[in-house]
Image (tube, rainbow, N blue to C red):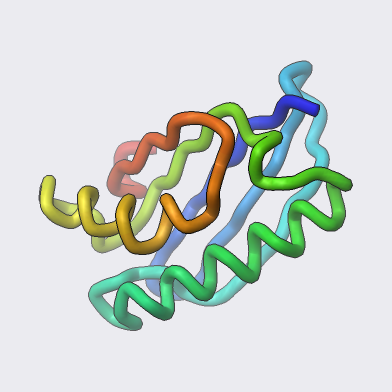
Length: 107
């Protein structure tokens, strides 16, 4: 299975969607805030891991099936924010392709 992942993470909620390459929604999950400035990076990692796990179970897939991902996150403002978010919260997900990380206002 080849999937794309989209994450909209904010100060009050986080949405995560998995879609196949034909655009069919395979899973959608809602979760709590994921702004590292307010909850800390380890909490963001736990939010992403929990939500991704639920989405993978619903879609019947694993992290290696995600061939591309886009994370639009509040609190991601500076280049060093994106480096830290990638290293501490996105890379541990073990996705099978590249992940773009941007401020949620730009998505």
